[in-house]
Amino acid sequence: MAEETKVVRATAKTLLRRRLRFARTRVRELRMIGKALASTKHPILVHVIPMRRCNLACTYCNEFDDVSNPVPLAEMKTRLDLLAEMGTSIITISGGEPLMHPELDEVIRHIRRRGMIAGMITNGFYLNQERIERLNEAGLEHLQISIDNVAPDDVSKKSLKTLDGRLEMLAEHAVFQVNINSVLGSGVKDPEDALKIAQRAVHLGFTSTVGIIHDNNGQLKPLGEHEQGIFEAVMELGKRSFSRFNDFQHNVARGKEHDWRCRSGSRYLYICEDGLVHWCSQQRGYPGIPLAEYTPEMRHREYFTEKFCAARCTVSCVQQVGILDNWRDPQNLKPMPMTPPATPQTQLVQIGQGRGDS
Ligand code: SF4
Ligand code: SF4
Image 1 (cartoon, rainbow, N blue to C red):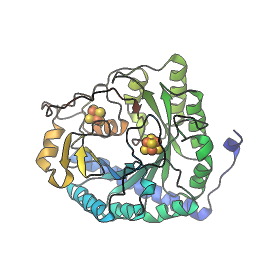
Image 2: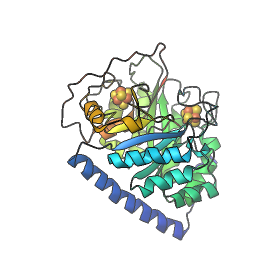
Image 3: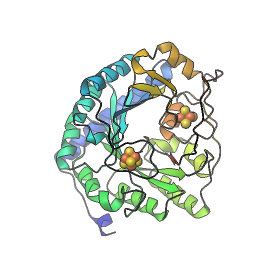
Image 4: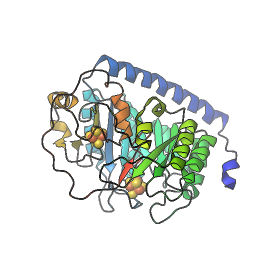
């Protein structure tokens, strides 16, 4: 693509602001790791959903609607206050499409005001220079965009072609860290697209991660030989990412089960638009308790609860959080009975810093 060679330069002032924010975020991340190693009593990472509605309708996605209203700002602040009081280190805003929330900037400000690291996953369609500047001002620290293909198709409009101009704007104006997630696996028409997307991301100065899509009944399927080669090439390009420390992505690519301890419900929480706590985006419905009623004892119980879905888990952000506790505290409690889904769903397997659904 011609765009791949285009040089995008940030101003000296933007570069300075970017370096300062990156440095401060690194210090805060190191503190987050120290605090997580010193105590198991607080959540490390929490996903919050201020907006379930999305402007797109990717055919594999089970995490959006086209009708719901934004969660009121006051309610979002109450939830963030509860999470701050639990000692939460990182908040990732997800959706739906969070940029559709009319008071998103204030949500981000409140996360920072409460001393937590602020990240966001978006499809990027609402980004423009003014919006990026507002995100800079609000104090955003991480942003992830998932790009599914080079050209839009019936499955997904999140293509390099539609988003490349916005990526250039981010390279020029954003002072927060940007990660681009590409995808490989079942349903991906051209595996070469993942490499082109990752190369473009790195060329623009972003980090790059890769997710693997499986359309199955929860069974991990290995990538084919050609796709494995592309996977390794994208992983090499994305070596600045924290995900390189995790064997998980290689196990997923090879279709192998993974031996780890999922601490969802404790060290990781997924808070839906209704303010209920769930294990994660792929296990919504349990424990299903309102955040305000979710006690330290409940978190403690979930910390020691073995998750039946762990061996074949495909949710990378929870696996990365798990690294900090995998070495300690075996899990010997069983969860409350759960009803498995009636119909198998296509799974978007995430291998990166965030869920990358958008
Ligand atoms: S799907 Fe993964 S992250 Fe979610 S509860 Fe199961 S093991 Fe944990
Ligand atoms: S994957 Fe993201 S952009 Fe696509 S429909 Fe789901 S929430 Fe919207």
